Length: 91
Image (cartoon, rainbow, N blue to C red; front, side, top):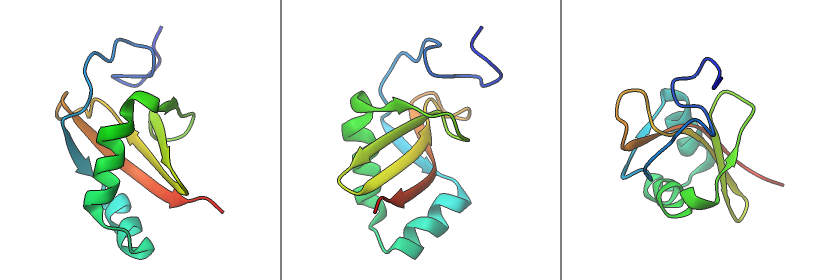
């Protein structure tokens, strides 16, 4: 069984994301961290193939340098979109 999420890791995610959507929390975090939204979106789109399953609120984690992005893909609204849930900088 794939759990309670509509698209959980290992449950038939079939395509790479083509667009990115943001939660309100993620928008607040990106502004607080003073990171360009386009840079975060590019990490998700370019590095999706290197993602790791996440045990937290989002399905996936992707890293680029010190930046970590937690996101869902497919987003429940759009199967071709990734939904950024949160992000942070590693120490």
